[in-house]
Length: 296
Image (spheres, rainbow, N blue to C red):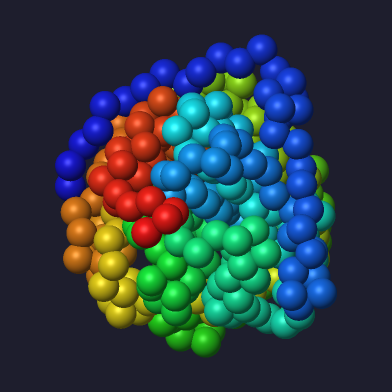
């Protein structure tokens, strides 16, 4: 494991004001569904686009602090996964990673993006890994932040128990209650109040049906198996204080990907929200090392 410097979370006046600069956009896909997303930077940049995939309790808006910095040098896009924001859910009641990877392909096709640097956080890492394995030539680099491994390699009993516990919590609490009860687990003790409020804001806006489908995805997925088959460039990073996908679990995924694990001090699961400078630097460094231009 290699450590990277810690960083104090930025103190924006209001996230709402910052989000207004990156308004929600929508695009129709070939499957007759719709995908919503936010975008920063100029489409005229010749640098490869950067595509950001959020986790199970979040959305495109969670990446606003990365938009501010990374959009200066390249096109940066963050989707609302199927079933999130204004995005059409996937068709399957109990989807697998390939269902979301297909939606990702359709979205990139609709935007004319042939190749990109792909970043996945938590559940988003599962989708990113499936896409990279299926479409390796379209991914210049795969960066996984606090990746969720999924329970696909576990016994049926374990998969069903994990799935049903999360679904029961959703049914009992609803998105707002879920945000109040679960959001604190996403951050370390070092997180600012602004970071805590931002995680709650994102989690309170999840759509129950989309969240339920994502819960099935988590139960069905096996990211380690995808990473073992993937031969492209990949990095894995995790917060030292991540209690949801702890460093030991991420180390196993990094080993499957045959890459060292980066550990960010004083950061929890939603590290890119509470320690934006450190995580933005990791993403920027990875993008530059992945190289390449859209025209290649």
